[in-house]
Amino acid sequence: MALATAGFSLGIRPVSSLRPHENTIPRRVKELVQEMTRDGVQKDPIIIDRESATVLDGMHRLAAFHELKIENAVCCAVDYSSRAITLGRWARVYTPRQTDSLHDVLRALPSARRTTLAEAFSALERRETALAVLTSDAAYLVGSPSMEEVREVVASFDRIAEQFGWERRFVPEDDIDIELQERRKFVLLPRKLMKDDVVAAARSGKLFPCKTSMHAIDPRPVSVRFPIGELGDADSDTLRLRLKGRRTRLSPPGSAYEGRRYKERLLFLDQG
Image 1: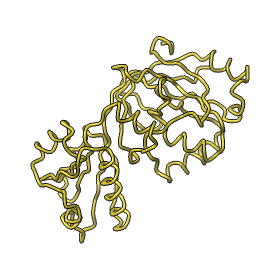
Image 2 (image 1 turned 60 degrees about the vertical axis):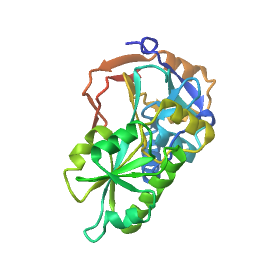
Image 3 (image 1 turned 30 degrees about the vertical axis):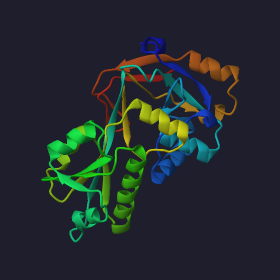
Image 4 (image 1 turned 180 degrees about the vertical axis):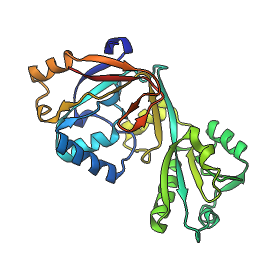
């Protein structure tokens, strides 16, 4: 499958022109800096909206480029309005210590309102609340539906989790039911996101909390494996030719790559 057939274009972009839409996890950025320094390659392209330069996938890669002071990056530009790109959410799963109570946390949030799980999911889909706190037997709606409120409440929960040493994990929204089978856990899920929310965050600089949005891109471009030592000169003829000459390989849904199994097809770009 050619890139053009998928509606993608592969190229070199100045790192300064790319717009992240959510914050990063410092530990993950540090890992990528170490990995890129060791391997000397940009493993995967940064996926961006061709119209706004919003980064859809690769926030941590972009942050690593800034840390390494690399001026350019290999990017795959896509049409964000395409139905082939869908937008979902990550859920935060917290596991408190035996001595900690979720109810103590909720008492510090005056706007928290108890409801049923079904009503909570409905309110999130209708964008009537900032987020919901879900447990195995109840749910709590918190905040107004503004993205500003989403940012503030998620940041509050993350600070509390760090303060008390709670375990925090991220799971796709489709896997929430599995997590809620354990009574001690609780799940934080933001309201339904729209693509306009993502672009607005990138343009304004008011970023989502880390691991909020989850983009499915079919096919998902991966494995460009471009030498970072050649990214200093975006006008290099060699650089342009190496990208232009790429062949692609398509793998089916369910393929594994870098320790993760993907529901989308994967479009490998490392066939030089």
